[in-house]
Image (cartoon, rainbow, N blue to C red):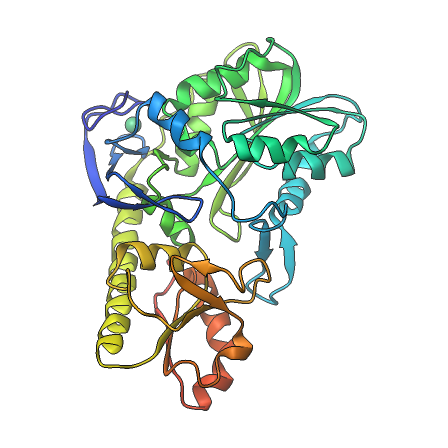
Length: 397
Ligand SMILES: [Zn+2]
């Protein structure tokens, strides 16, 4: 178990703080958990980690109870382009990247942490004739994934599921590696179950992208991988890097890599200096966010009717960690039909059409790269007299 003292990836001992929070913590399934986090990073290679991480037993229990708000496969799977608000699902976006590397029309795929099986189902639509296998620790999600008869689901923690060596032509692990207690062991197990020249597709939050600022605020995100650090680690683990996308539109890092039987020549340790700058930028952004939330709380105290725009991760971090926690907001206004009508940390999610007369002030609670788009959407309400407040944080080049 990694602790404050030594980096799991490179053994570096120059460990610097990022942030700390608790005893109220945000979970990725939009729930509040008890506990605490103390995030640090390694000055030598850039790896970040929570040095108060949960032990393996606690993690298995935590994920067995993980749940989703609905069983709709697309509920939390929708992306919006910042330019034209055109919708695409996350799985389609991932497949668009991945399929050019998958030339075979027959094979075996394993999705580690497959959730409700959305990705395996989408792959099956595009590449029928494969064998589709998923491992998922959440009982509820595993049951949902099993509804599709053509998909084989193992409920449990990856690594405790007995999978034969050298079996899979493709292993996908998306938004999972940051959750595991020992990413070295997880990557080694993936290497073991992959066939020779088999393809690995990994996607994790990019902790150096401010649009993924909440990566440092989710209690079950135990590790944080800057792009060069993860690529270096995969090479050392016996993979050849095929493609890297350092940051998607939503701040994720993607890597496609092939299993090689002989390790590549020792890759150079990435310089971690960039991580220190990213942590400073993160701290400045989070200070701006907490200040904006505090402005909202002060307005509520003065009897104003305050709302948020957004019912996603940004709004969630504000409602859990800032002075807006437990405050009487008039609503979270959002455009997603999967969110409208639900309760979000006790705040009703309402459509924009209901904003007239419902609020005096609206705070834009979305990730930095969509603030301007939302400001333009809210322009008619601003002109009608609603006080619209945004972050005004510039993205670093
Ligand atoms: Zn390190």
